[in-house]
Length: 483
Figure 1 (cartoon, one colour):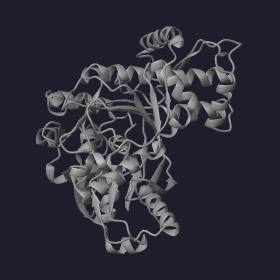
Figure 2 (tube, helix red, strand yellow):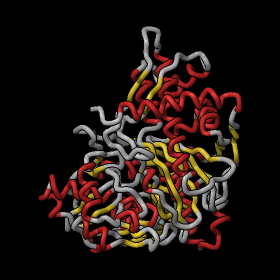
Figure 3 (tube, rainbow, N blue to C red):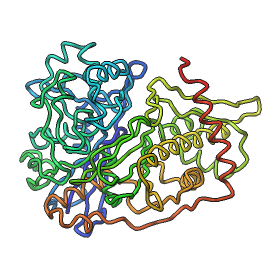
Figure 4 (cartoon, rainbow, N blue to C red):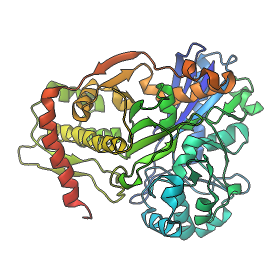
């Protein structure tokens, strides 16, 4: 058996994977995000550890873990976790959806004009490197004490094994990685005043990085098993869904919204704010579009309009589908990445009248998020072709209504598969399996889970949504720059 641990933004989730590749159990422990200032988004790394410990103890209380052979890690990307020489956390981790380092991005681009040639990516506030420049300018005493910089899941690794290590897919989101060489770029590190010695070692996803600490193994009722490098949440989610070959594509509907597609080697289009990263498997790359607010927009509008839950809002939409007044929504509650790279973009409702009702707003938010995902799909299409359908994972994928809307607006069949709600932790467990079984078993271990349902595009809806999308895109251009 194998364990997958996924450090998300809203929860830590752990799963137990059987030898046959089926999920035997899953547990999660919630997390909260701190937003002390406008554009800020932070978490205390100690809360990550406590949530992981709680989830593991819950799993161990119900299941025999003595036959677990290895552990894989997955986690939210880009977060800056700063440690001093004694491995003590210096400040709250600055998260992926934090937009404070916009000016630092401009400085980094000026200091290293060939950043796109090295990393294949646009300089964005979400990436880790500009966060360190922000700390250097605004918190110099913290910067001077920084001995190590870790990504979120790799802080868990340190607590579990005592080792400083990361994987290619997660390191891709720092702007410090030479993307073609799959190793740290001394040039990019120097641009932020750092050295390779301050970074963890870079491994491929299935490679073993250390062993579980003896005391912790006893606490969690586990053997002292190896811990593999794992992957960033999106790459691990793709491994969990069997998205490992060229052209295979996945859409993740979590706090953020991601379109992930395996590419034919390394390819990039930073002009459209498309991400080009290493996959969690050796010699494999992928492109990725990211919108910063997806399912989180639905959480927000459900509370705003008085629904008891997001599922209750979806039930109301289904009961009244097709009977909504025209309202347009820009889902940029945390700024935006693909294709705008605009941390100052704001959420906007347009088209409201005295007749506008709560459900009109809920529908507008759902459509707005989906149109933003279509912008991201266009960015992916700018450099590569995708397969005949898209696998959908994440909490938002539980809504059949949303999956049908996605098929209609993106004009691509949407596939919902078994395990779609635990994608990253499933991928982490699969990488753990590869770590002990070897890479020769990639396609045997990373198979596509059973298809539960395919949602086909409804051709008669295309014209209606094309008109709405044109209004959506023109609205952003009309309000861009207004604060």
